[in-house]
Length: 289
Image (cartoon, rainbow, N blue to C red; front, side, top):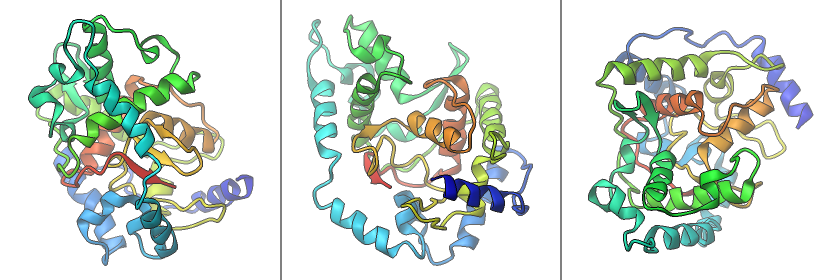
């Protein structure tokens, strides 16, 4: 891993092809997606939802991924998540009672801007509030999700069950309110900003270096489609995990201090990344390297 990070750092010093500033969200989206269509002209748009497995040069990883998907290892975690989703609360209601259409075909709109709280809301936040409002007690409601792996995985499994109800739905994020645009801009700023001892931005790995494999089973995925598969199960983790857990490990890899799970900055980053993947189908839960 150290060798890989040093290689990335060296390449990052000369990476100068990134557009540092973009315009309004619609213009950002057009430019962002055009970047990847030009970089990977043979990849059909919908294939970007499959992450690195869609990219040229990743055929070996694609073969392995397809073999795993014959009997997806995340099925055990998803099954546990579905049990939580379907099990009646003490008052007779279920998680489905908290969501429009019983939670079906709505995940493509997450995260979203909430006018009442003046914050971005993620699916995890709504699931947790649903449990609280119905008097339920789950470990993930009170645990430190950065430290308590068991509680965080439980939340990831429940969220995976929620997202599974919207598989195939195309991402459509509402940025019509000023608050949503402000949160989007904060997420965009985080995405393009260098950080950590390696002085890397998210864009260095997942735009400039997307599609490259630096050994050690560390191929770099394209940013287009980043959020479509989460919650996901990474091979090295062997369990379903949340997107914010992935953000934290990315920050650590560039030697930057991670933010708190569920923090506003990660919520805003998720908003930005999700909007940049507008039009792609949700594939969560899924396998990832």
